[in-house]
Image 1 (tube, rainbow, N blue to C red):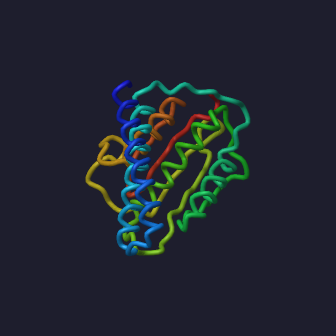
Image 2 (cartoon, one colour):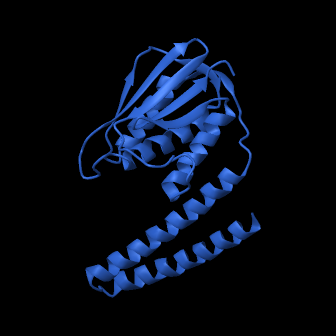
Length: 199
């Protein structure tokens, strides 16, 4: 934990220097490619710091603050709208008016954001404007099933490989779902999340 904290401090120091450098470049009206390069450097430092934070979260136990009456459809609608603001095309197809449970609203919201972002990265063709479909259904009053479909085929489990920052976030999303007593799997080109509703 201390090592990660020290690394984040070093990254923040580098970002500070890079930000000063960008301001000097902008004042001296340097060529656009120099400004673009420094912008990429700053974005890379931000991503590295974000990845370190995610790794720390993954290494800690998930402490849930469950509350009754959490509406999965409402949570997913909000997450999909937020993700789509960035130009993504996530379509929510809810087969039920209200799937409610005793759940941790904040942690599940984060998990669903990471699942939606991960699904967008796993579209068969990244240049294609195709859609990712999210379906919710209640198999009975005790369990909900949520699927992200339209993904490409993989030769590994994206929830267990840690093959980059996106998959670390997927692993953390799975850990949150599992802390609720559920499961997150990659089956037939879909993320399939099963979530108990009764706490």
